[in-house]
Length: 228
Image (cartoon, rainbow, N blue to C red; front, side):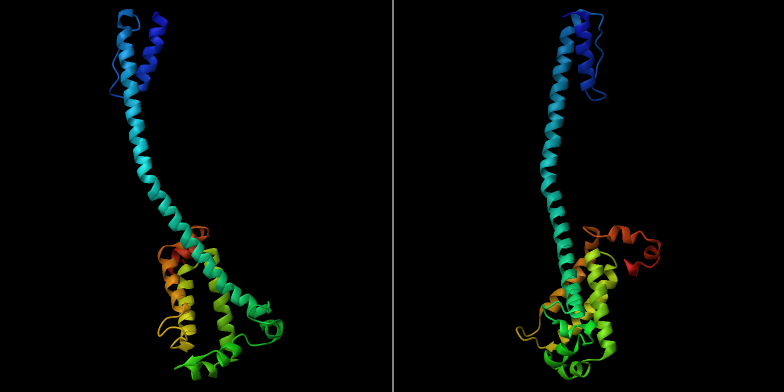
């Protein structure tokens, strides 16, 4: 091996060895070329060992990362789905889209969005109370505002604390319209929605596929954390 080739091999070998493990081989002494090859072999073993270590760690961490990402997106999907259910109720009652509300019974055509449900769909121990509220203008406005604002907040991932409190109160009131429920002695879908709302807030579901991170950095939100 010529001096030029040996010098190049020595340079590559030294470069491949982590700091603290390299040793000097004189490019001026051709008799040391075997030491260069030994150094290259050592470097190769160390690189392979480090690569195997990194690969092992990445293999063990990958399922945990994927599990976190999957859970994160599941919560985000649940948030958006629940928000769409609530917002759709507002849109259908307001414009009479023909699903649960006919156009002639829509809010924009002068019909009460609560009278049909409170008069004819309530039952149980609070039936009289809710039937007495049917058609009340204040009740109509509060009910529709709750549907609109909670639905938007959930879909956008902002104001999750207020959405949880107001949405939770709405769900409790809707549950009370039929106590006991028709198909279960205690629970109906409104209680499940309430539990889901609390879960969405606790895991900060608005920060995935939503504007939660941006919203939480607004100055007024930082000043009043209840707005998060």
